[in-house]
Image (tube, rainbow, N blue to C red; front, side, top):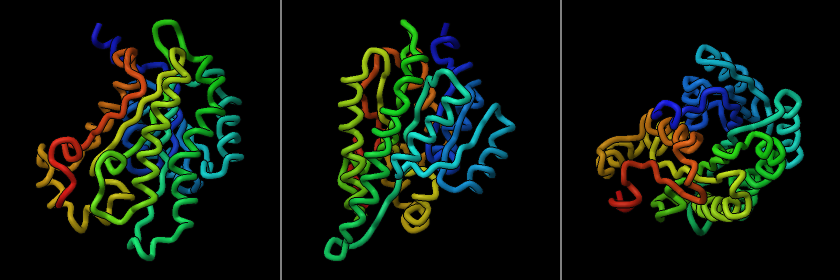
Length: 260
């Protein structure tokens, strides 16, 4: 019974930003769990490299797409629809960050970051709704999983003003979409803390030891930590969960604060 409860075998998933970092972690976890996975990234060479790496774990297809462009969002979904008649899981993971001191923080950073981190997940979910609706069953709804951040929960100590605002906005968008799309599509968010990824590389190189020490569990996130929650939210085990934002940060934002 437990194997069936947490199974995603035979499901089809689309993961944006799936060529590196958290997206790549989730893609590998889904493939190992028996899902068919589509990954998307704006760089064709990154798609090719990630597809080669992931292919040993299962059936994976890579589609180059810049999801900050609404037309490319639709084209991405159209490409998936040309190959699949249903989509069980959409993981909105692609994101951008911008850091600069308050007094010199460029206003165009809000346009770039909010477009990719908030507008794109909405546009992709809107475009994918027919495929998601086709995948749902009475006892297993389709899933949308948005990748937010603990920076949208607690105030970060880095000057990433548009990023923290965008992730807080994505968390609220998750709740709003969950309300509208239930019961056929469940919408939840993961709010990662520090994981080894391209976006976090500079921060971990600079203060990684202090971050680990400040985290109640005493370490940086591992691939399995992200894979576990991503599989849970995509499986029947989470059939009664929608509109949730789940911090995956070792307690950094929820029990220890963000002061380093």
